[in-house]
Image (cartoon, rainbow, N blue to C red):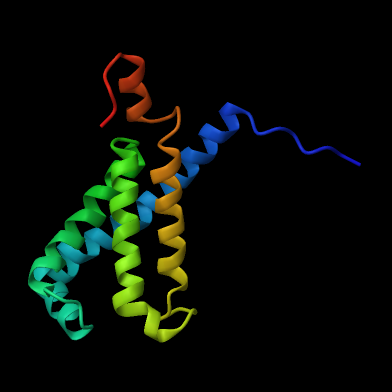
Length: 144
């Protein structure tokens, strides 16, 4: 029987890098789509039709959060903050829009729930060694 190798710091940091790159890219693409393809006006209309309260305020916040938060995750800067805000974004999407459609995509919570879990994991674990957060910490500056 082969034993499972221990999770080393290097493996954990590599796993966090992979997680940041994947979930960050997902959020970048969705934020980019909201800002540059649909436009804030289109997202506002869509959010209002889906029953999102204060759609005029929420749409630009969500669009920018997903774009900038995704970039932050990819770079590994302000990772805990970005992860937490994006997790809240996904929780609200589940509670307001996707929850009433069941679990499975295209309208259910499946995709959003996965994004929630990944963003929350990064909020809890941080960026890992391969990040701007870690680079700033090594230079004696506190990470945001």
